Image (cartoon, rainbow, N blue to C red; front, side, top):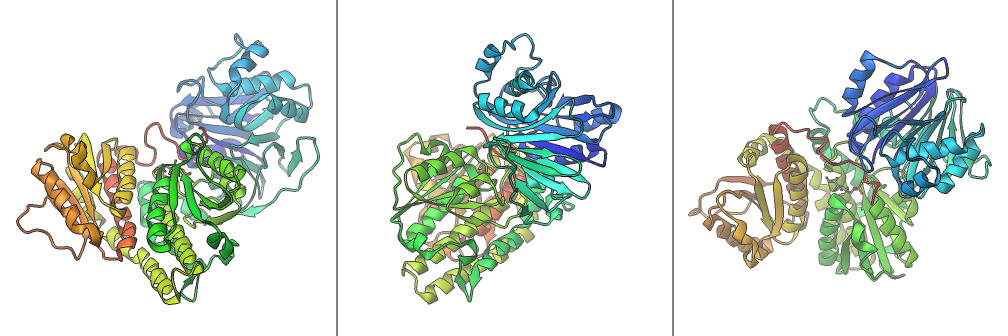
Length: 606
Ligand code: F6R
């Protein structure tokens, strides 16, 4: 969490950093700040609580001139949201931006007697103070000694006042990428902030120091030995990082789904069969395991739940789906016969990363499904399937989720084929249905105004229930999370058969119920469950497969008919419908759809 940026080059740094911070704002938006080295070699700071637009106004009134600077957009952990706690922090001649958590900051305050000297309540200022303590003209020695003292996670951008126009970067766990542009050098928390300036970047290895100069970038290990960076190329079009005419990134990203799902599936199809050779995944990985376990958080975990239903129903394989944040603390049973799949859009979620490391320590084979190229989870895994969703900027995940689903369908198809559960014809039929998913989603997107109309029915609700069975329930867990996080309406997804065991007590005429009915084998039971809540006065918004018939005796408040696919693929059109529902509620409530309160896009704290 927190976005960091650094620039040194031939152009003025302020504007470049403000633009980049706006892109990085999805990582945190409690406060923002920049530090710029002026011609007189003084490093000056502008920072404030609030958004990057507030910082921009501050800079318009009282700007900073200079060609080298570092900037930060914050998601508060240690210390409240205030101007003083905004980064950068300056101590002596050292200026620092930090993403992560310095766990031992209190003992460092005591050890270096900093209590009276600090201006903020942050752990980050302590890192600046420790670096200043060790600095005596040798930046590398100061950085080495500082990081040896720090416990926790950190991505640090550092400027020393007597080394003008040079930025130093070092990290442990929290990400930093570094790029050379046509007229300078840049670093950032992720490539989306750099894509407009350069397509070539490298991920700063942990405990290495990058030195960014106007003319070059240098990389050293902790003993001061030069290291050759491993250059990567940005794998998406920079235009995909803009809103493309939509009011919010979320709407744009919802609308992109048919295209990015195709881009995830098509390169992995050969003559109608799933083919994972481009990902370097051998069939032995899929045939030699006796159980599968997904570790993931939030939306990515919900994708895992759909994966579980697929694996169990098609491959007949046992699959667990674990909350990554709980995985290590529940004595999870994984061994050499377990395939652990880590699913993550950002590839940086620390809980998922730690769960993955735990699985490796216990001998499991690991596979990551990640969107961001070169991210930590991808690098830590034995194998990776990259989803080709492109940059996802809105905090609420949409296209990353459906491309994760696409990857799970591919994996299921390949696994069933490799294990001999599917013959060639069955595999082809499965894949042909997957290839229909973009078209089914497009049909829902084309009718988005109908969903906008339906969304008005829950605009003023305090609580909403979402009910369904089987795969309908799995997708509702995700639909409910989407509604909660961007509309602030309390919403609970419930397996509809379970309602009568207690929770139906909460259903009244004031609790709208969203029901999803798309699974033939439980269709009649799902309709009965809907009747149960209707009898308690609840207004029901129904999303159902288009070929189902409604009971003509019952009265229906709102019904949206979903394009028909095979049951196991219905999650695709349903996802799009529920994403749009949440989006329109948030939009009509006048909320900041892309940046819901208290959240950040990349969760790098445990
Ligand atoms: C919700 C959402 C989060 C993420 C979760 C994991 O819309 O985006 O629940 O899914 O924080 O993030 P990644 O996928 O980056 O590991």
